[in-house]
Image (tube, rainbow over all chains, first blue to last red; front, side):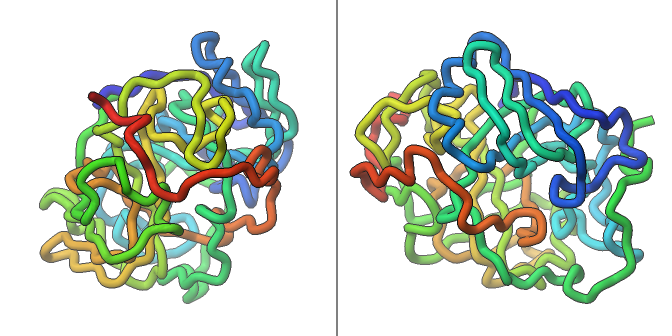
Length: 158
Length: 158
């Protein structure tokens, strides 16, 4: 199970500290640059409002099974959090699509939570029929613990 | 970028042919079995209604940049589809959680689109604030092409 990068993220975020923890609390614009062998696969993507950017979170440190997530002040099981330091540091980020150019390989997007230079390993269309489940319960998040919407360096490799 | 399996899917689906194309059109129950080193990370997950199962789609064949997706009859850019045969064959499946047992490592779930034995590489909580965007446009899917909700063997390795 070996991953190959298909492109890179270009964003304003250079380190975890200060970077928004998810696209939904981020700002500004970003882009995804897809490498030449994969650009033809971008056809038909411009009709979708949103995409999943599946990325390899290369600046994350090794994982621990319990962590204090950004949105809480207590230790929680890692798989009940979206912390980037995971056994396989894969992120799924749902971002707004502004434009798609299969020729140059550039997807212009809305706000992202991904650091500049992050390797992209997949792009998928966002399909509400498959992906949108509003109103579902969210465990410890429903308890309304204190927390922060921008990261610090707790999950960053030294 | 080397992936390590953290567990396996156990489901009724043995081959692509006849398997529902997404959890939202599937039926029955399934489970995820997490390996011992990662079980402690399942703490606190039982409060979430849904999880993302991130999986390595090991039965998918090599990718082509344009494919005829199950929900259409025309060639479409691969990244505008959820076809399993991708440069990195990673699937994200949003499934209902029935129960979570950190001791045995078993997550009982609702319906899945994942084949029995599929390696699991990550489990994340489903958070509507991050993940639910109902009513977004879905390109060629909005055009209402003909299609099928269960797979055939077009993306399966020989």
